[in-house]
Length: 83
Image (cartoon, rainbow, N blue to C red):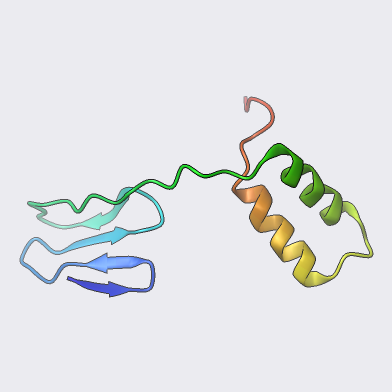
């Protein structure tokens, strides 16, 4: 097996390509084995998510601040149900 970025590539005949950031198989052709990937259950807290949302709304925020705020919000639990 070889790690390439966030992917694990197995060079056996059951060539498996797995994304290590998400516990699911991205591509598998004739797979006989699946590599288990631990699920990251950590999420951004409500307080940090609220601050991140405020930073994104504020026009004076720096680009780096907005980038970090977007990352924090993408890892936060959704606040309402989607329809």
